[in-house]
Amino acid sequence: MAIEAQMGLTFEKVWAAMMETREQMKETDKQLKETSRKFHELSQEADKRQKETDRQLEKTAEEVEKTSRIVKELSKNVGGLHRSLGDLIETLMASRL
Image 1 (tube, rainbow, N blue to C red):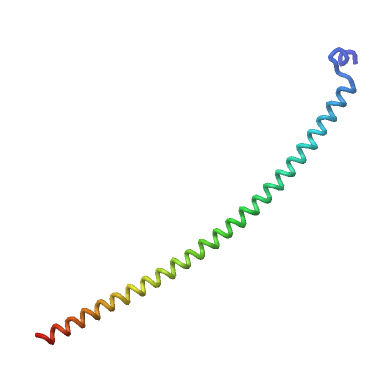
Image 2 (spheres, rainbow, N blue to C red):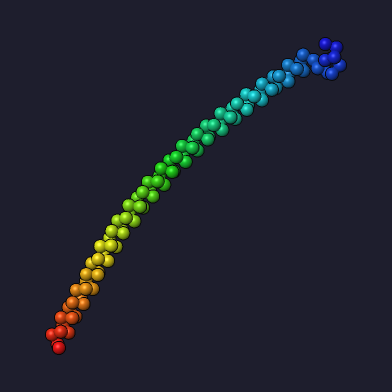
C-alpha cells in the first residue's frame, strides 16, 4: 500500500476514475443505441425508396414495351399504306397508257 500512496493512488481516486469510466460507458451505450435506431430508420427509408424505384422502372419498362408494339403496328400500317398508294398510282398510270 505504501507504493500506491507514493504513486498518488488512493482508493478514492481509483473509485472516482471507475465511476467516471462507468458514466462514459453509459453515455457511449446511449449513443450506440441512438445510432442503431437512426441506422434502422435510414435503412427502412432506403428500402422504401428502392421499392418505389423498382416499381417505377417496371412501369417504365411496360410503357416502353407498349410503345414498341404501337410503333411496330404503325410501321406495318404505314408500309401497307405506302404499298396501297403505289398500287393506286400504278393503276392510274396504267389506265392512261
